Amino acid sequence: MRRLLISIPYLWLLILFLVPFGIVLKIALSDVALSIPPYTPQLDLSEGWTGFRTFWAELDLENFWFLTEDDLYWKAYLSSLKIALIATFLTLLVGFPIAYGMANAPDHWRPTLMLLIILPFWTSFLIRVYAWIGILSNEGFLNQFLIWTGIIAEPAKILNTDIAVYIGIVYTYLPFMVLPIYATLEKLDGTLLEAAEDLGCTRIQAFWSVTAPLSKPGIIAGCFLVFIPALGEFVIPSLLGGSDTLMIGKVLWEEFFSNRDWPVASAVAVILLLILVVPIILFQRNEQKQREAEQ
Amino acid sequence: MRRMTSFNVVSLTMGFAFLYIPMLILVIYSFNASKLVTVWGGFSTKWYGELLQNEAFLDAAWVTIKVGLISSTIATILGTMAAFVLVRSGRFFGRTLFSGMIYAPLVMPEVITGLSLLLLFISIGLPRGVTTIVLAHATFSMCYVSVVVSSRMASFDRSLEEAAYDLGCTGWDAFKSVTLPIIAPAVISGWLLAFTLSLDDLVIASFTAGPASTTLPIKIFSSVRLGVSPEINALSTIIIAIVTVGVITASITSKRAIVKKQREEQMADT
Image (cartoon, rainbow over all chains, first blue to last red; front, side, top):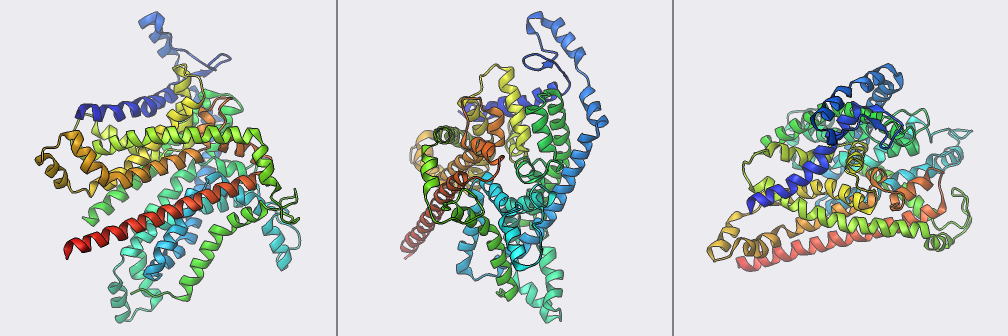
């Protein structure tokens, strides 16, 4: 019974999660070809061991060399890192005051505020990104508003620029930043702040010497929860970004669907995964430290 | 020491305005008579009428709901099993790999999950369609379900199960009459999460869908790429309305359940 319980989900994940990665790695080492499926070599099991050996001999790192030679790819990796970092920082700037306000709100407001933060998360991601197209376009609501107030005379181009991508990421990932920060701020012991103020701190000093360091685990968790998915983001750059907005998720998509170059798309995926391993491990360390601190 | 300062009030107001104004604009302009999406041309519900006559959207909605219902049910069963394995099974061969495979899909970029699953389906010769989308969605949703259920199980009082065994229950009886009712709220919210994730998914569905199995997000994405359209505004409004009603109902029901439980506990104490 126990063995059955373990083996069903285990096998499911092995077949539908681990094996596919093996296939991606294998195709990343193959060459593109005009056949169905469009890559070579194919593993021919009917030839037995010799078939496997010729198959093995034809695998090479050519696609990875290609990625380093064509500057499109490393520019896309760098630009994804840059966009994800800046967007994470902006999300923190917008999210922290909200979490701080929620933690200071009267008790009977909190469930409602919490619901208001979570509600957008249940609404379709695609629709939330789409909502910004009408706002940011040249004749959109933001430009109409800015011209009406007299801040600008001519409509500014915001849609199809990196700025629109930042807005999209901040907007869609805001709950991921607010919730962990709120969770740490809520547990914060208020007497520490009182002590700081009794000892002569101003409220701003008390904030920087008590609240900020104690909310660090929540800030770190929130930043990773935004940074990690933002790095491989596809929907936001393709709907809000311009043709010159380079993000690796978009490059992978186009390599696969437009160029039908499966081996290069797979190599792009392998490298993206290698880049992500570092922040994921750091994130898990942070989570573990927090759990140990709680015990 | 909690104080609601004016800074708090301003940041909350601005924050929630930022979160809700874009959606509010979307909802208001879905009732716009004008085809021009940024110019108000009077109140009208004609886009809803056109939406209901658009066969392509209706077909896609049906595929999406079907995929969502089947995949979230599979994901809930597998995810609950996986949660049991994580919390209860102790050490077994390959445990680290197992928990790694549970947590990895949560942080995996969707483009990679989609690409790898598609390559698997092609290499085993499975034709792309509803089945492949269901398999893909069940796989990543089960990980979310198992996280939700296992966090509930970690705070589970095992002496209740032991009592059931002492009273002569078999393993299945004890599960059915003690364990399941206790973890039920987590299982239900896991199912809802899996269902929402499935309805919402564009990237993985795009990789694993065949030409005859377009889901609603794929359909929305391809028409949104051409720009804003009032029909999509109407569709978005319907989705926002369903989600809002659903989430508020769920939160009120769970709040009532908590209040009821507290009352019962108070009664038991007195």
